[in-house]
Structure formats: C-alpha cells, structure tokens
Image 1: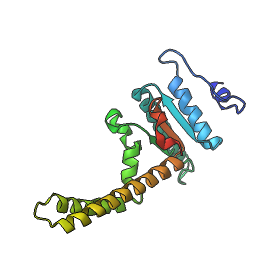
Image 2: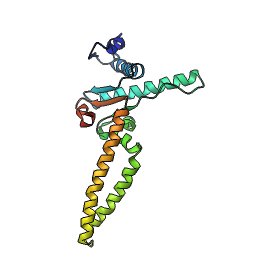
Image 3: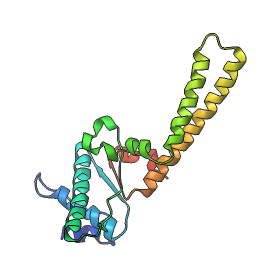
Image 4: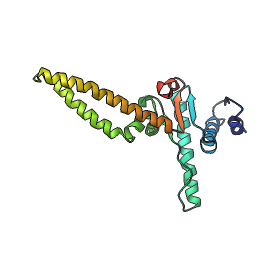
Length: 187
C-alpha cells in the first residue's frame, strides 16, 4: 500500500515515518526498486545521517543481488534483472566499508578514462621534480611551471567529465541531506 502511494505520479512527495523496526528501510528499498525498474525513474535518496544512507544502499544492493540469484536458480539463463547503478556521495572515511565500492571516489578511480588521468599525473610529477630541484635552470623551471598549470587543468577537466558521466548514468544517487547539496548534482 505504501509503495503504491509513493509511486503515484500526482503526488510530488511521499513521507515514510515510524518507529525503529517498522519496515521503513524495506519500504524505501522496494519503492526505489519499483521506481527504477518499473517506472524507469532516476532516484535521489537522502537521509540525515551517513548510517541511514548506507543502510538503504546496503539493503538496495542486497535486494538487487538476491533477486538476481533467485532468477538464476529458477532458470539456467542469465538474469534479466539488471544490477542497480548506484552512486554514494560523501567522504569515503564516513562510509561503511562494504559501501565503498559504490562511493563516487571508488567509481571514478575504476572508470574508463582514468588511466589517462594517471598518466597525466605521472607527467605532472616529473615537472614537479624539475621545479623542486635547486639545480634546474631558470628556463626549465618556467617551462615546467607552464606545463604544470596546463596538466592540472587537464586532470581537473577529465575528472569532472568522468564524474558527470557517472552521475548521469546512475539510476540511484545516495547522499546525506547536506551532501545532496553538492554542486556535482547541479548538472
């Protein structure tokens, strides 16, 4: 009943509240699954604390994986239920360890295109060595400084592109209420 109520298109907002242990996280998880897989919506999940956000993501991942496992047991054909593409915003130090693979930072590190960023960072390090070497000639230092600025700009541009691709392709974005104000969600 709560799921149907929450998915009604004429309601701009639905509130789920209740004391601990009454199934709020289970209801929210099912609501997200239905919104993503049935209605093909993108979902922003917020909660006041990191623990609450991580609990929803844990349950969402577990539910997604258990549905895939159940379908695989019923037939020898691979599952048609896609895994939810979720991105968890927030500082990695504040996230549960089993949630880290869904953190934006981890996803950026493993995304296509970040190999180039790693190569650019290596090149940047070589110019930093030139700048920090007291024996480097003044002309070499000027060139290194100019290249350093250019490489930093390139890294920033490439990383921003990867972040935008991850955010755009995510079905579910999870953050604390404060974290949801992050500028990367503006695009």
